[in-house]
Image (cartoon, rainbow, N blue to C red; front, side, top):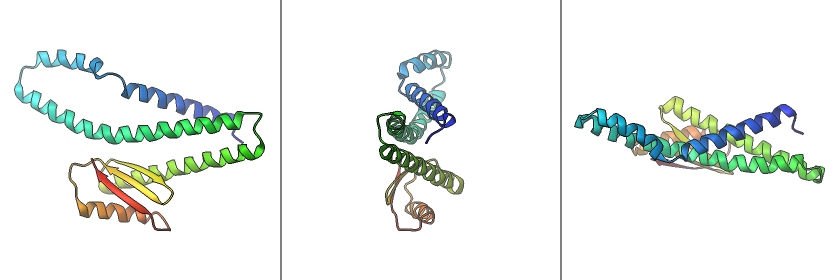
Length: 173
């Protein structure tokens, strides 16, 4: 079963996840009001063009980060549902065991995805979103260059982590 320390971890992790989602989904007007006052002080046209290019590059990063957060929130909801099953006194031990096994499987998937993402970051210096389901692996790379050779290298790197053949798709954002 799950101990108190694990329960606290899941509770705090859920709270952090909810707060981060709230922060990301906050209206941009709050942040733009500060930028408007800063832009009023700076009248240089070159600075405005540099800020525009920075905003475009931050949107690409936010796309990968958004995908990660969506996946985390989706899995967090599933974990919370499974946690409720574990805490329900009316559920049978078989149902609780199945819920616990599903929780272990989700946590193993998370660990595998994080390992693959960090390997891509280490070897290719690219931010990546990795989603693994059964025998498929979806990867979204934060890069403007759509390089076929790089995609093949990444696919080989990911496949080397698995014993059986995986269906790997690579997309560039």
